Length: 51
Image (cartoon, rainbow, N blue to C red; front, side):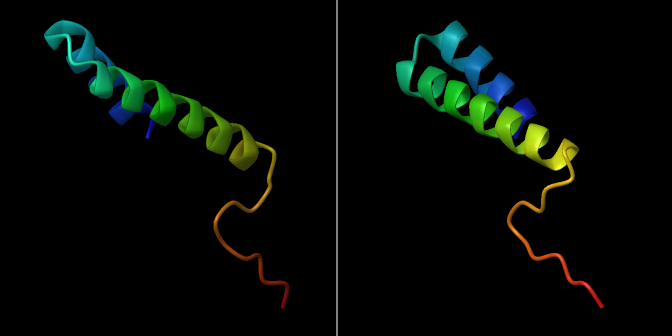
């Protein structure tokens, strides 16, 4: 998600399309938040099963 955000950010910057710039920034922020939550061991978007 972070890589996709960077790609859209770059394309939006080079072409001057502001919606791609905005979507790129949002994807980068969401990707970083999910990455931090995943690194702390927290289950994101799923369930942890304790058998």
